Amino acid sequence: MIVGVVKETFPGERRVALVPDHLPALKKKGFEVIVESGAGADAGLLDSAYEAKGAKVLPTRGEVFEQADIIVQVRSYGANPEHGGSDLELMRKDQIVIGAAEPLSSPELVEQLAKTGVNSFGLEIIPRTTRAQAMDILSSMATVAGYKAVLWAAERLPRFFPMFMTAAGTVAPAKVFIVGAGVAGLQAIATAKRLGAVVSAYDVRPAVKEEVQSLGGKFVEMELDTAEGEGGYAKQMDEEFYRKQRELMLKVVAESDVVITTAAVPGRKAPILVTEEMVKGMAPGSVIVDLAAERGGNCELTKVDEVVVAHGVTIIGPSNVPSTVPFHASQMWSKNISNFLNNMLTKDKEKKFDLEQEDDIIAATWLTKGGQVVNESVKELLSKQGGQG
Ligand code: NAD
Image (cartoon, rainbow, N blue to C red; front, side, top):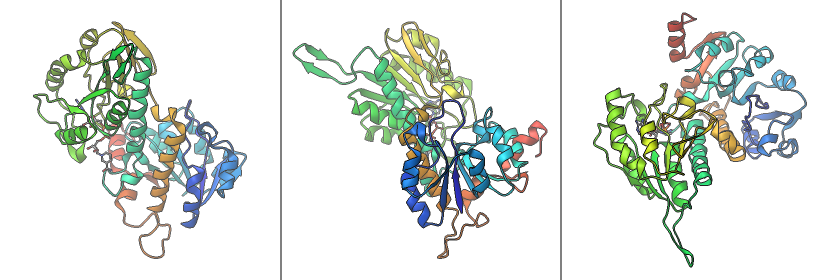
């Protein structure tokens, strides 16, 4: 099978779907790789590095689409609505397209993709199971985001993170509070600890308490119901729950130099957990990094892709955070994709490429096939919109 790597076209996107280091292992499994010239440049990966690992570099995107059996991307059409559409005319019937596709937020784009006849796969809807962990782009990208959020906070904070005992006096460590201890939150805890801060965290899922503690964080106890839903995710709670949570968080937020929010409920707008009132209670110079900014934000004052200063507090609402660490984010993405491709080989001795084999990961991520949308959740959303269904 020929795997084609194309340059990302989403504005500001610096990641690439496959990195040169992973090509020899793919070749051993029977995958040849072709690359659009310049595809890895923004992640520091030159065409020559791909060639050195056995890839063929082609000058145009069109040639990659023409020759590849499988196109791998970071953002395929659904996750790149403004610029991804021009790829549709390059796609061939039965070609395989793998990437992030935001199928549940833009089902109508999945329907358009279906019309090209491609077999497309959406990586964000991979099951959160142990077997799928090595292919889970949500986890790997959340790791990048949690790390970077801490660095941004440290950079903006007019204080040190660690404690210092110097001839010029003693410096108290910064107090960092992480709201939401999923993959991003846990990485934020670890990173803030490494920088020497005193870290506390809260999550509505009680199961994470031990994980927070094992990273050296303090789990903040709140008298709230637990909110664990299906698949280990947080479930949507009513407004009364969030009101009570905000009330309980008021004091912790006021005592923190840095608040990093990561609280998400899959498929929903992020809950508002840090109100303007709470921001007012923070000391001037404090920093909030809102990793839920793309999904509406956990802080009432967040503006996506802006740095807002309100009541002396800096509120950072970044989007596409993984793209700001393009080398390692690409390396992780590439490993996830390589594992995803290997999972498409039969599990017997023959190791034949076979999409039709029985496999829960292939089934769960398969979006379009033979001109139709095949994912049940996407079909349901489309039928609500009066589309295919
Ligand atoms: P996420 O990005 O959906 O949410 C981030 C965190 O915010 C979650 O921990 C969530 O509980 C928390 N949250 C939601 N509402 C909140 C609120 N009101 N207050 C405080 N916190 C709130 O989550 P994620 O990082 O993708 O992880 C979700 C689950 O999936 C976790 O149980 C994680 O361990 C699990 N997971 C499993 C696998 C796997 O087995 N393949 C991989 C990754 C994650």
